[in-house]
Every structure is written in C-alpha cells, then in structure tokens.
Length: 344
Image 1 (cartoon, rainbow, N blue to C red):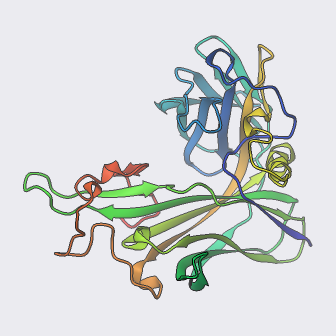
Image 2: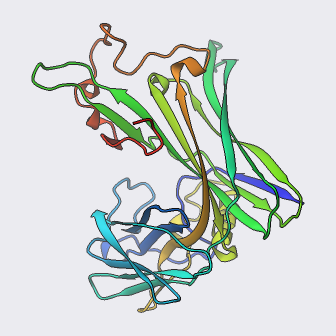
C-alpha cells in the first residue's frame, strides 16, 4: 500500500503544461471552462469565462450558452444559467455511466469534453482542530505573536478496490450578525463564503489494497481574527479523478515548482480537456469525480484565545461602527443563505 500527498501554493487554477500564445485583447480571448460533475446529489456548477490579464481582477463571463452534461446512454442533464457565466443543475453522476460536458455558445461555437467514467471515492471520517501561538520578532526587532487555528482531516476504508487519484477541495464560510442600526430595519445575518485565496492544492494518491487503510492530513490553517468571532465553517470535499483529469493537477504542480513567479508562464496559456468545433484553443477543465465530504464548525469556545465578533458583543459595538454591521451584504461573497451543513 502506498499513500502519497502533494501540496502546491496556487493563485489560479488552469491546466497542463503545453503553453500557447495568448493575446488577452478582447477579439482573441480564450474561453475558460471550470466544472465538475460529482456522484453526490447536489448543485453541480460549470463556470464559463474568458481569459484575462493576470493582474485583472474583473472576470468576463460567457453568458447565454446552452450547457448540458450528457451520458453515453443518451441521458441529457440541462444546466441553467443562475448567474452570469455560472451554469448549475441539481443532479448526480451514476457509477457505470460515462459523462461529458457540451456547451453551445451564443456564437454557435460548440465546446465538448471527453467522456469520463465515475471514479470511486474514499470516505472521510472527521475533521479535528488545534490552535497555536507563535512568538517571533519582526525586522524592527519588535516582539510579535501569531495565533492560528489548524485543521486536520481523517479518513479510513476497509479496502480499496481501485487506485484512487484525489484532490482536496475546500470551502470556508463564516457568520456575521448585524446590530440594530434602525428601528425600521431588523438586523440580518450573513454568511461570507471563500474570502481567502486557496492556500494550496493538495493531492492524494492511494493504491488499490485489500487491507484497511487510514490517513490523516493537515489541510488548512487560518489566523485567529474576527471570522472566528461567531461561527466558522470548513467544508472539505475529497474528489476522486480519472487519470487524465488528475494529470491536470499534477501538471499544475510542475508549473508552480518552477523558480520565479506566475508571470514566467501565464497559467492562462495552459490547455485542458475541452475541444472546440472551430479548432480554437479552450482553457480549463470539466471533470467527472467521485466525492466524499466532511465538515467542521468552529466556535469561539473551541480554542483558547477569545475573539470578539466583527460587530462586537451585545451592548458593546465597535467604534466607529463599520458599515457592514448595518448591511452585512457589503462583505465580498456575502449571502443571506447559510451553508447546508450549518444548523437550521
């Protein structure tokens, strides 16, 4: 039995190592596909965007496309555009079938992925946390402290029927409760999703085995700050890939192991498993994956350092009062919709 774990710092998620010339002017932008189709009944998401400058924070969406996932037995699953460039469907992949993505753009251009099997997943058991205090001296000789919460995931299985090629997929959420700012507007509660860039890509290989297998892996840490003032949630998905789609992520590791920064070879020049009927290059990837999941909610009482909520405690709001305490939707990626794993 062999278990291999890889970690990789990353800012952008694109595909393998064959670089192409990329003109980011409007008339020569490349379509970027980012989608997975899991074997869990959940909202499946396929994002279609255009390539852009590395330093450009504004993503241009591909809107008005007709997007489906089709199986080799003729089943078609329609995806609906629920936000600009974001296509969703409540569906799941069934083992024994093979699936691919097909997207018809408003220009008539047709994008397709390869057909893929549905890999088996590896069960996750639990997530544990620990908190740490690091004392250090900065460049001015001043004593500093750094408090953080560390997350560790555990998984186990009685046996493994096939080699598994997997990647950890993390989603973070924290809660912010408004204070009373007006007698006419009752305070609301927001949930802020994925406010940090991914810290790493973590890949996990487990070979076929007739013996029990278990693992534990540190997967995430975060400095203790106001996101831990109320409730903080970590949702860990372990995605199991087919070889070609897993190789996409291994190629990212090779890319970012290079010396220098990401502008040496723009991630946007790297191709995935999407083809166009026009023969033009398409970036990104659509992957059919097996998925297992574990979640963890962290409250202030779960670690040693006390942390006040962003909007203070009852009767003692911060001064000056942040605008977000009267309208929590001002936070980036904020929503009134709580994650499905939070208590109702």
